[in-house]
Image (tube, rainbow, N blue to C red; front, top):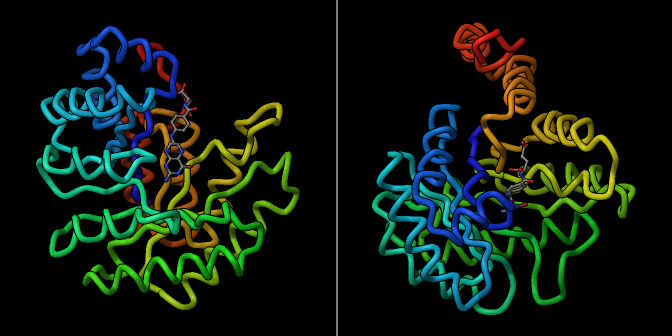
Length: 270
Ligand code: THG
């Protein structure tokens, strides 16, 4: 599993307060904590009003890159903002995101052409988010084919099939898994990803839905997730599924995480 740490996001109230007061120590702590917890990328999202987004992202990128060596997943709904901050990122990471909306691909694909950057591609377009697996896959194919025009290969693309809240769309998980299978059937080397909390919106005891979403999605072929890597239940689920799906040779990663106290019962000093 490719783990993208979600915690540096202005949509989270505590992070929003830290951003507002330019509390560098708080952001550094989030970066360090997620790095130590085993994230492979750090998602950085300003989550502020549009007129403040550029300044906020610039500040966040400076602080986060000073604290952690991990590559960044730059997260903005605005392709032009992504383009403006792109030169400030010191090593190849992930652009989050492109989609079939407007001219997003034409702004982002040329930017990462000839680099080692990856890109998250959302399966939506100017008509919104489709409900069926076939339509989600069709948008994914179009985004992958347009990327090929810029020499961007499927291995550099993470498709996010945009799972809907299961409280609103009863077959959301089935559609999500079917979409992953259809996409991987045609492009076996393309990667897939998702946030973890959309599925459980509007449900009580969201944890039960989120953890089982993670397990089912991983079994359907989800390669990556945008999660809180310090959440012990999420880590234990991801590591356990990797063991069960024969993706953890001799259970090494699982056992190591247990020995290091990253999963399992909390010790008194934790
Ligand atoms: N797809 C893509 N990008 C995304 C999302 C997606 N970026 C934003 C979002 N969704 C993923 N990021 C978050 C960040 C924080 C939370 C949820 C999604 C969140 N965090 C709680 C907190 O920090 O308090 C609890 C976290 C926990 O302990 O598990 O709610 O879908 N491409």
